[in-house]
Length: 187
Image 1 (cartoon, rainbow, N blue to C red):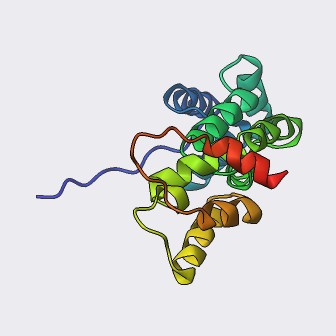
Image 2 (cartoon, helix red, strand yellow):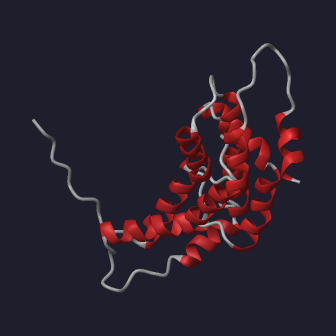
Image 3 (cartoon, rainbow, N blue to C red):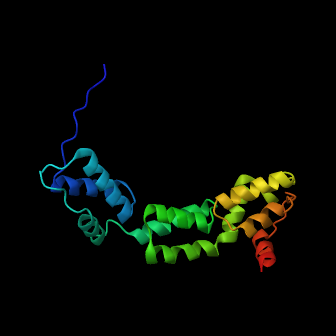
């Protein structure tokens, strides 16, 4: 027999603050994501008083001042994770924008992802078996699909084209410096 749940009670100022603290306790987040979460909770559960609910921004700023939220640290961690997974700087910038990391925080993070563009692109190519990491050379249609995948992952079209056009390496134990070759060919 299905259990019927009673609706959650409407929010009050103290319960809104507890909800915010519980959220930042459980998740790494940004100011924008916390504000969106609190607005959704107020919309879903309503407000206990007949008056309009309070502004969310002062609560979010107070929690940030207490050190529970750090947009820059969140952005750096997210950018590092995406770069390690092989995503390019455009994809990193888009993820930061979606998470609400903006302004000078994002401006300081994205250039670091751009510095690691070649290594990140090679990691993506290795993971997807593109270009030098493919088992066999791809025909034109295959190279175009590989380039499209790399561009969707946020890599520059010229870099994607160069990697997709590379012939597969012989995996005889040679340690080829692909990053050096690509940097030399891009300059």
